[in-house]
Length: 472
Image 1 (cartoon, rainbow, N blue to C red):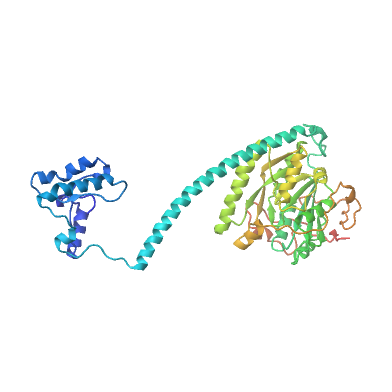
Image 2: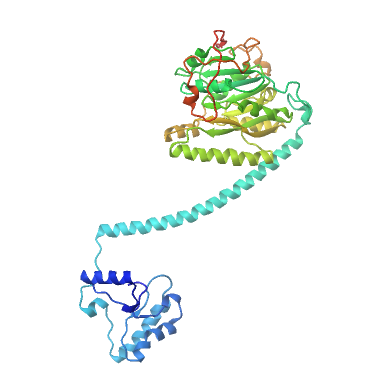
């Protein structure tokens, strides 16, 4: 019995267990002299405690430990005890042999032995993995801190070489208030096979409290489903549809930028839903002429399931922690494709790269190199639907570069003016002004489909004067 000496030292539960073992045919042996060799008192002290009963002519059951750490002192004490008692006629044997009972040692079957070794190997591997992961986390944390510090120093150095902010693209002097505090905004939505959510996206973009004009440009990048048909059925002057052959998201963005008329451009993914105040908050930081782009705050709408929860945590860390730090250090590395606002002249200079796997990061870095700030606006909320299956997640995270022959010219470039293949611009007066009652035909419950809290149902005005832009 563990932690017991004589029978009078048993507790009530231990006594009941010992009695039950005796009734089942087991012999319960108690140790009445504990050498406490586990405390490593030294060989001499162990021998003295073990032989104390022998000096008084008493018998005793002596407890010695053979496991639990360094037992070299116990082994040496056993040798001395045997050397001391053997000349006096003591014989040393096992307990079962002395009592004449069957051996307590049982041969373990091969399959049970394999299970035991597997368990031991798994525990050892887990212990090694835990130590390795600890080291890797420490290294990753150090690299993260160094990378952040390097990014901050690099951005400061680049900005130090940039020209005076008053000479920056499309801006006036620092502190000057724009002539129009709520300038018109062009919202560009590149879409490819987005029939499931494109109507909800459009409804949320038009149901805005932004006081300025809003034009919405949906670029259908060769969708194989009903994406273009759904957009076409909305039939509102503020919604413009451009159909083009599939060439990738950067090409679709460049096509939309080419026909946009506003100086402030908002780039939105086709599976993203805005709140009513999102555009207003997103555009507000551009009142500072030193700001060239604004990153919004993307939230995960479908948080159900393990993948949804993991991606929600990822977004919270990426936006609420990382971007706050990058914003404070003035070294924002990426404006997400789901929600971002840009100055049109800035995009005209740097362009949207179409020969990269991460056009949003390359575009943001180019804006920083131009000497303008990229800031984060946490109040500009956008709800997006994340992949719900491992296959969808893999396809989203692993984005192979699509071969797109040639690069789309960007407005402001010489080649953009009158270039063939670009959609023509809409007529003046097609900006959307909020406050018109009505609904999108056939999509009066889109706000429920989106499943986003805080986004009311669409209130749009049906019209037959839709401007449809087709490739020339």
